[in-house]
Length: 113
Length: 113
Image 1 (spheres, rainbow over the protein chains, first blue to last red):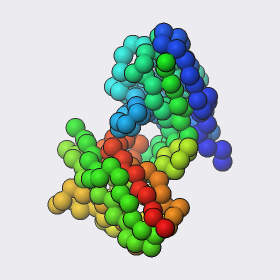
Image 2: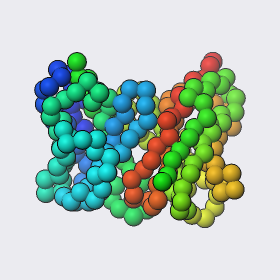
Image 3: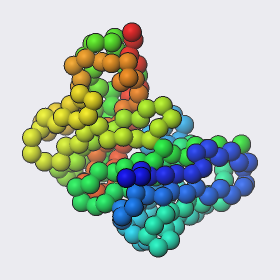
Image 4: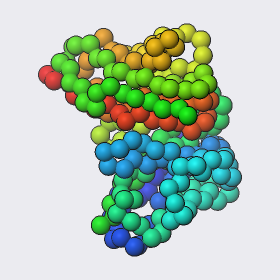
C-alpha cells in the first residue's frame, strides 16, 4: 500500500507570507494527525482529525494555523502569516483506528526567513 | 498529563556492542508506549509498541523493550549494534492506541565502526 505522502518536502518562504502544506494519508485511514518539530525541540502534537472532523486541536499554537480535511481524505495545514518561529519539520500521520499504529509521512521542512 | 523523558540526547556505541536507550514516562492512566525511529531524511517508523499483556516487547530490526511499571520505564535495547542502526530514536506515550502520541525529546544514536 502507498504510505503517507506529504508535499512539498521543503518550503522556504519569507516572514509574512502564506504557506500551505498537504498530507495524503493512507487510503481508508480515518484518523489523521499533524505534528511538528521545531529545531532542537520535541515533536509536538498539533491536531487530530477523524474523517473530516477535528477530534482534538489542542496543540495548534495560534490562529495563524488553519487545518482542513476536505471530505475526510487529504488534509492541508495553512500558516498565514508565517513567522520565523514557525520554521521546523511538519509531520503528518494516519491510522485506521483502534489498535492501529500511526504511519508517518517523511515530513515537510519549512524554513521562514 | 502524560510526558516522556529520554536520558541522553546523544549515545555512541561501537559496532557489535549493546544498545541501551533509556525512556521514562509519566501517565495518570495505564499507558500505551512506543518507540519510533527516524532515519536521515525519512519519516518516523514504528519500532515496537506496548499496549497490554507481556511486558517484554519485541520489535523490528532486533530491538526490544521492557515495560516496567514500578520504574515507569520503557528502555529500548538491542544486543549487537549495526552501522545501519544509526538514527534518532523517540520514545512516546499515549492514553489509547489511537489517541494523540506524546513524544520524548529523542536520542540520536551513533554507531562507531
